[in-house]
Amino acid sequence: MRFTLIASFLLAASSVNAFAPSLSKGRCYGSSSPSSLQSAVEAAAVSPAEFNSKLEAQLAKLAAKDASSKISANDLKVVYEDEHIVVVDKPAGVLCVPSKNNGSSLSQAVFEKYGSESGRADKMVVHRLGMDTSGLVVFARTEAALRGMNTLFRTRAVTRAYEALVCGTMEETEGVINMPLMRDYEFPPYMRVSTEEHQRALIGLSVEDVGKKVLERPKESLTKFVVVGKEEMEGNAVTRVSLTSISGRTHQLNVHCAAYGHPIVGDKVYGINGEAAPNGGLKEGTSASRASVELQESIAAAVGDKSMCVHAKTISFEHPVTGDKLSFESAAPF
Figure 1 (cartoon, rainbow, N blue to C red):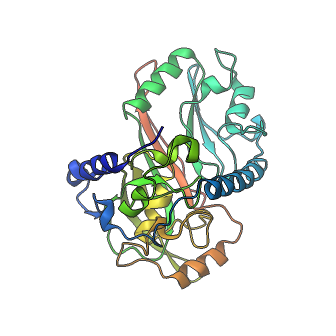
Figure 2 (cartoon, helix red, strand yellow):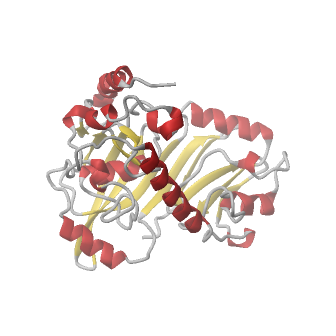
Figure 3 (cartoon, rainbow, N blue to C red):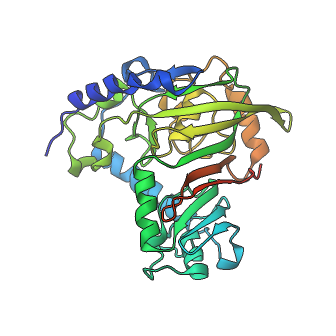
């Protein structure tokens, strides 16, 4: 089956800004039209063979990284527990759920400590954090809690905020980054800001060529940021920010920060010289205060092998069974 993406592209391009102005008192950065965003390089014709070769190689790297995830029930930092839910403060470098070849994960450790009504660890999972992200994660112990938490997340009734350090000094105190995202066929399986030329490069390809996800239309993506403070890391300027992923796309915070010109400190995928496309796939960061290449390289050298500086700091929701209003906060480890 062949896909024509022009209509989908136009739909995504026309819908992104429909509700953006009411989300923040700050400015809205980015564009509803992918054609106004300049790619880092001119989009090349997609070779299915090259795409699949890159994907296979990158998935092998990720599998090797997943194997380093280690945590036990004794290591858990429990923030809250009752008969229905458990809230845990996840350390960076740990998988939320097991990979295909590795059973050591946060969900398995929680299951070993608390068990679940279903008798299955996977039936406790209601949301996830990336392996390199630390912070608050909620698990369900009962079937009622699982159903309730799934409904809360599906209806966006859960409020979450992340804290991060980003490269450089952000001039604006707050705002909304508004850039549509797509799967990056040049750097699979990662994400990038969607541009018209990269959408057009996919015309004529099939699911059999590159898989379904790459051919999905661009996803409207909005990230709210608020500057918390301006700091230094070994003499290098960094900014502490609060981030809220309004649309909740895969790797959204990482791609948006990089595309804005202030990548997350320690981000070895979307940061300087990372595995994904530089600047979120754009020619350069869109912010006038974007961090220079030299500054980003200096910060990367200072960070070394330390964890990425992004932390799921707060989470608020109504208890899925009792209806009580709950709110939890965890201090960032950086």
